[in-house]
Image 1 (cartoon, one colour):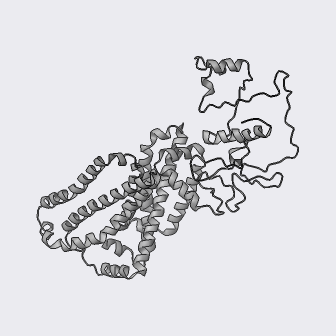
Image 2: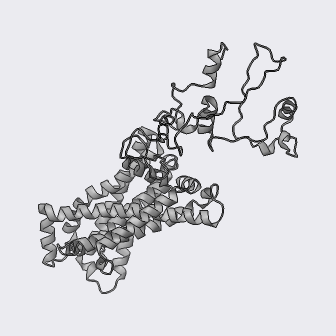
Image 3: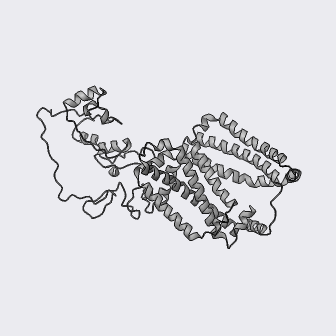
Length: 446
């Protein structure tokens, strides 16, 4: 703490903050590498070839690195404001300037902070169980538990320091012992209760613990704790760096991250295989929505004009007005449109025919006999296809069921379908005119 306070003098604040941001970036990149290694098998579903794997790895490093750098910047600025503009902060800085020794015995601090960790774990564990039972939402539980894992120990830190100060006198003899073994044994015995308590709690509450997103929770908590630790151990070498080059480097990293996230496969692999990528990218999209239309240009948000709420995917594109309102790559036009080809209805088709629309989800055409598959997997479909029109080429409007089916039912591109909010998959709103409604208007019972 004294090193921290001495490092934040008025003349060294900017370099010290720069060093903190850079160290947090490297810590975050390390966390991103670890998370990427844990998600290799999941990412393999989306990636093929060395370039795509390299892009995904760089996206993982930059996403976590920049998040940690932003977190370190916030912590550093908060500390700087505390030390400069609050009375307790000024008193602490004056104490550091006088070179006063830390409070009490190191052994007493170790013992007290072991018990402090034990109490903190108990409180955070109880809160995690309460969050999960109340909300029954893994993502929300992870976020709230992560906040509690940082807030609870912080609130209990000051009482722990006071207790350590009171217990320093009887334990100071261990600090002065010539051999280190008594002190090591004492510290090991002090650390044993939190470890045993965490293991026992996990075993007894495994039904709840197993439903928690532990990987995300542990990663984010460790990342926040490590960024906070960089404030306690400032680097003299990094502190010589100037803020402007560090800022330019962070901006270049952000531009590279945005460029990497434009690749659909790379972004999908990150959101699926990394424990926190979806949350971090979603938070960035919500934060960077200048026109407040619910969409962002960041990380595949697809908003081609973030300065106009009338321009976004899903907006109506007025034809021939010179503007691309729905971000589909050009202005809609009705000029010189060729008429659709018409076909005569065979006389064998009855006037009151029945329409049966059959859809099959996730069925590969390459595994159907009517499309040349060697195994007899679809005898009834093959028999139907022999007396029907068989399309040899078909193109989906989206790569997933939740967007393809509404396109088929509304005859609209996914970006033109009116979607609702608040659930996943997003609901199709009543203002869409569907195939069933068109048949009903023609007098069919649907």
